[in-house]
Length: 220
Ligand SMILES: N[C@@H](CCC(=O)N[C@@H](CS)C(=O)NCC(=O)O)C(=O)O
Image 1: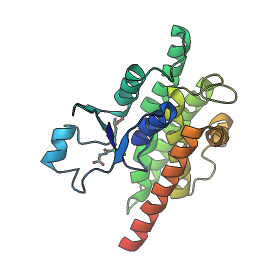
Image 2: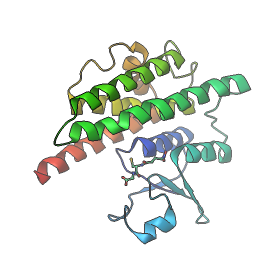
Image 3: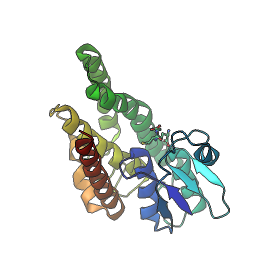
Image 4: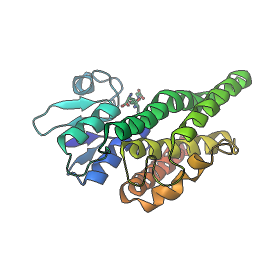
């Protein structure tokens, strides 16, 4: 298998976390330079988004949540879903809050803070939306340790890249108090550092962020 991946993409990072946790042999590949516009990449993923998993027979699987679920179905030997239906529902609830509400509020903020003319009112509204989403995520997390219970689950492979991106926003925007009301989310990097798969993803995203800033600096 091959994975079209970008080091800093929180979506690709979820899939890499799943692959590392399961010790799967997957070659990581960068998309072609013109992936956003090329017809060749559109043939790989009509949505023209990263990540995309390419199976050994050439079949492609796109969208990070779909890929994580596919890997879980196809490679259940190291399960990242708990065993009971109730526990699975709780894990899926964490991933749903993280994806639909937190990521939905977080990602536009990078563009808003990066804009030449910043709209302070719109930024404050979006930050309030993010804070409300973070409060919901905070309430959904286990009091300590992994996102759900005491072992790695699909919720963690979503949460670790999300948590990295939150640090990224703090660095990018200078809003240092972003996580003050959310101690479980704030402390989650300690859990990441104890886990082989999550810490590897965190380190790759750190390298990706460094390259991002270097490229920006050299572009002036
Ligand atoms: N819902 C998609 C989102 C993936 C996504 O938006 N990836 C970004 C890279 S981080 C992308 O491909 N953006 C398109 C672009 O930059 O043109 C998923 O979960 O895989």
